Length: 288
Image (cartoon, rainbow, N blue to C red; front, side):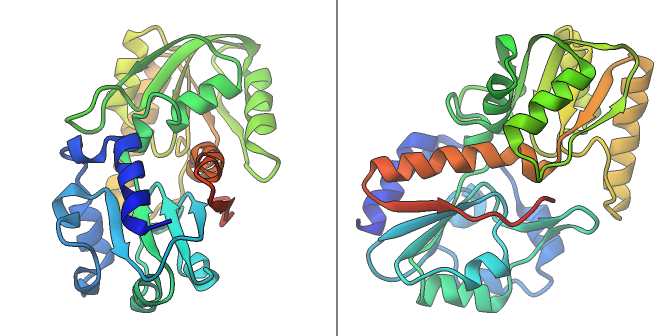
């Protein structure tokens, strides 16, 4: 399949041309003191921060999906492979986002078919958003979507719904859905029942999102960084404010890992690519 044809299919599915203000410039400035990535990425990528980031060589024969791109994943790509990811950067819990090496960019451009990613368009997608898939996967009912993280497209990155499970039962449902390698912990337990549950996949330990969830009746909040070892001061301050609000409002917190909660869309996209007649596989590089 021609790369331009596949990129067009992805652009349409994720509404990438309409997305505005999904700004990755602060993360790129932090990760790349030497901005060598600018020598390789597609014209127009900087500013849009979604879509085809690196154009490689040849026809697309297969696709590898992942949550976070990494040098290790790129090193294993066969010729003719397009890498698809939610994020443009790698990640580790303690330091936070991590760069791709210059060698990885050169491999994506010169050996593989390139690199396509969708962040806010995936988080806000009506079918394959990680919050929606997780909420459905653990059996939440009467789902409501809210909290957009970009402009230009409808939808939100958070889902709230009702559960008849206990807190531990909800945590076990997440363990079953996400797989045994994903660590799921009940962080705070102000009550035994899960009740009305907000699911905010990824790094959702944010007081603003929590308040919007509380306003929708949330008494249990599930995200991927309710507990974090990140060394960055602003991350720790943000999580402290989030935890303070949760304690004051007596909201139970469940942590299911950033990587863990954003893995389901990458598994779904394997099926999406296969329906186009391409070989596709999910490449695990976690948990983290």
